[in-house]
Length: 570
Image (cartoon, rainbow, N blue to C red):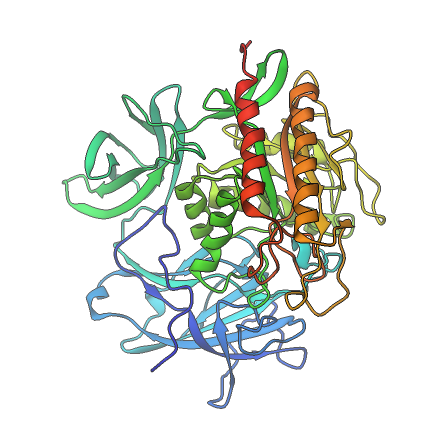
């Protein structure tokens, strides 16, 4: 029996069609310094029958890829595919959810196109290059990983294993010549409407139907390229405690009424903004202050590095975070596949989304800074529709920071529907770069304190106070540690002692929330990561390092105390 296709779930839950073909699985592979450069090649590399095999979509550095290299720079992938006969006469789109960093794609020896960016999805129409029967697909991926493009923690000044190449799902999809290319959904809870912006061919019409289960609650018609709204009479708000999602069905029709395309999506009706509560600036969710209590979530796995081994693993981290009584994660220095945000949307978890850092913004500034700006925008576009994402974080601790205040304003301008934390932990800075410090704009005054939470941020006239990272207390768990020298910001000897210390830290967080205006606290971290042993879980997710029932109880007590703070809103 053939190996099952890894990560074979539908990769794009917010723009879903019934027909598709997953290309994950075994590919042919050539890589390393000796192989032809994969940096924007004009011709495809030939693949002899004896070529090494790799499992896509796991990076070549991972165990799950089957090859476990140290750092690949030049990567060449090849596989064949045959289209289902029912796709005859359709336009065929080839989708990549993420490839790090420069990709060049060939079909049947012909160059299709190229893409730069390690964290955003891209696609090509390959219809004109297809042949009857088997077709050959070659992907060249080049990843210098030299800190001059966004690379987060797997860059040269990061802490963890390098990762390169294809690291999210590759797939094919048939569409008509006129089809829905993209969709933006903007909930307006106070205005009782869902705003839609659909990209499709000129001259077509879009019908949007909002469903609660099978029942239609609202519908509206509009044209692609012009935003329109669906009024929802009594919208059910989305929140971590009640993560209600509406299904949204979109139908594209020609002028004569012929149906050209049909897609399914979903939406959560929620508003997020700042407001004053008893004179203190705080973030409001659906008009109410909810203390945001979360985990720093780095999304690394021992066997898949940046890629979760399975859908269950991807979902597990969210389920555990919920079970432990948190309502937030800060997705730190990386992005995840669309399905991760789908589970955050569906299960109910607030997300702060970091932009992966660039490491050398002051070298070759025209290209490095342009790459950062364009990839930041692409990341926001990719995840715009997820109600769980309530805050963008362009920079962390001054790592690779530049034009912080301008970029913070730019992010807010590009997406006014969310909060922006311009430079989380502006009080810290790496030794190689001068600190930008407090940008004095955006929505948060944000400091990092290890172990903390002593003297966490206090709000000012226009911004809420956030403790963007604290904690980081370690526990050694023999048999569940990465084989390097392990470390943390502080240590406890036993599960009981670590739990006691965590409860005490959270009692202090509650004091800061009540009397110093703190609105967000993010504990480091969800799991151990390689040399770091300060996770709530071990790196293999097999051991809960604290008593989860006690963690849940104190987390929920702090969140509930926050809800009782509200005496009056100004």
